[in-house]
Length: 226
Image (cartoon, rainbow, N blue to C red; front, side, top):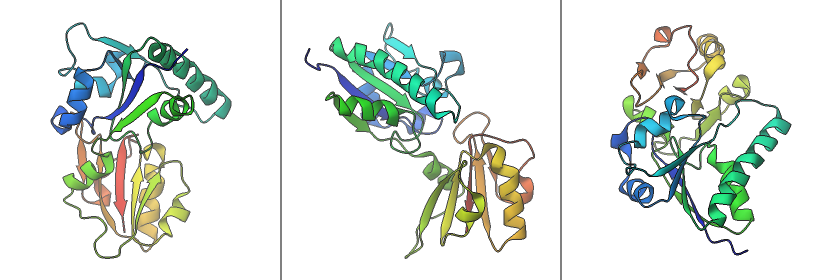
């Protein structure tokens, strides 16, 4: 059977529909099916961003991606989600896969997109505003001035190794690592430049001083350190 469908990986920014690009809006409006990386619309931040763009009766799917580091479980679940996506593509559908931020940066879409490309389906990326840039914007923080290095660090990384890097460090999805990072900054030769949690969402918080960061850990916390 020929691979007839078309898969679009669409970034929709952090949390505000105002950050949607024209390209993203047009692609969503012209899609046969829109996929969201969550178990239901009630628990899907990406859906709240694009719900006003969806046409009446437009078909949607909600795929629950596991939050686990068990590689076997991840591979199994990603394969199941891809199979369902592939079935839609084989029906000749234009399928949009929505992701917060940009689909190329720590994105759930990467797993599905790589498998679709491997199998010869047409695949296109529509970039969105990355969350770390939106967070930097909230802080009016300019990145990469002159020859300064920029490092993007996931919350799963070793904090001490990351802090030893030159230049500015951007820590994304800190979650339970937030208290440890706060302590490392206080005891080391580092400058805290600010942090933002849940950027663009109704519960957004901006922290300009290290002492302002609460003990409660936010998964969607991005911090900047020099």
